[in-house]
Figure 1 (cartoon, rainbow, N blue to C red):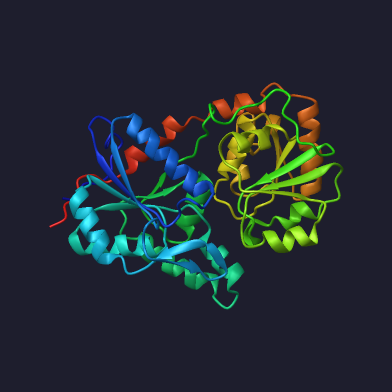
Figure 2: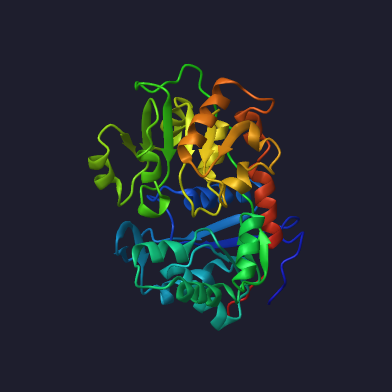
Length: 359
């Protein structure tokens, strides 16, 4: 059965929801954290969630990015899993090998499904494989998402941009922060010369991390995360503290022990780590681009109290440090508290298509 997504879909009834994603642990990134938290919150609302991920499947490292594993030849197994689970709704979170397989199965059996646009796939692929024109990748992305009853995006800016690229059925699914997990810690300080500037996220070329590492600013730069560029960057910038991937309390302490969160990416569609840093009491320095602009930009209530966005990232850093040293009416913590995950989960439920049927 195909039903169009509606504003109250899934809110009143118990649903079995299948989420297909190529991004999953041990990867540490915003997509994985978003999907993990979504599943927990859906369960708290009484729904049953099952994930199809690369874990436990025949998978191969992605060229140029071995941390990402591509699960191949999964059509028969996935068809069986969908039939056995009999989901009320299917959400395809990523455009990787599992996402492609799930898309093919859903189309073959007339199953309604939704998708999400989490990352700037066209720019990322073009950055790694210059011979592939972005327009070709955008055409492929339109093809992938076109059959979805809803394509979920995190911000209005991204929605407008994708509309310009010819995408249809776009719906907002924003992001939140776990304010119980991420919080200030009194007395938490890194054992480094201050001020401490921290970046958290994948250590990869598309994150534009070197724009941060090359800055001539006082104190110590800290990088939390792992990725294909870590080895080369750690050699090039020996004074930078590379702490590797952290989770749980260790990650919270890394945030809380710093002074300013620096977000050098120009391509992220949201930047979940920005809200995590704010929840831990940090001000933010970033470029005035999509993602930061939508989360803490000048048009966002309280944005200018907690973040400085500037085309000169060094200027943004020093401005954010001044904010940290001279608090404004809205604190970073208070700003983060206004962005709950529950409201985001209800948006997701309002977007999904319910009652697929696999014959």
